[in-house]
Image (cartoon, rainbow, N blue to C red; front, top):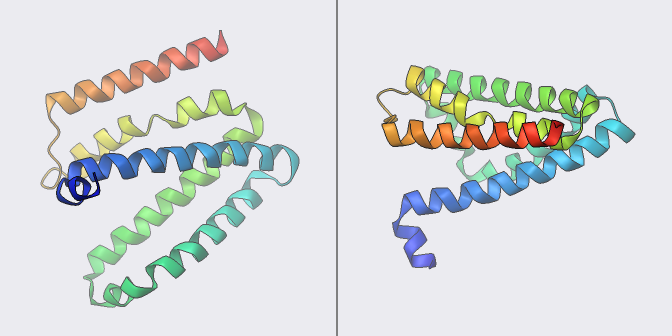
Length: 153
């Protein structure tokens, strides 16, 4: 199985994405507890991002030396990515402070819609958006809508 993962990058991406989703889902449950019992959303986001950055800094140390050699445009995209991630975490914690995790999580899971839209707009040369991808995204969004209706109904 490990050999297959090493040679099949799409499968490896799916496996890693699954664990990312599990991690992100767990962070939402913990985040809800934090913003309702311990700290306001901005403070919770600050600490989450601080400790996340600290852990990532340790993990990325071997490869961080390559960044200065990157073109300025690449560094701009890294910063833009960080800005979006910070906004996402801050807004997620703000939502979790006023609504249950079972309501917020499905709405926050609209990520495929935005990923599809932004990929089409900004990564046209890098990412190919096919009918199958659009259909898959529509199915995911349909599931999110059904979960949201069932949760609120």
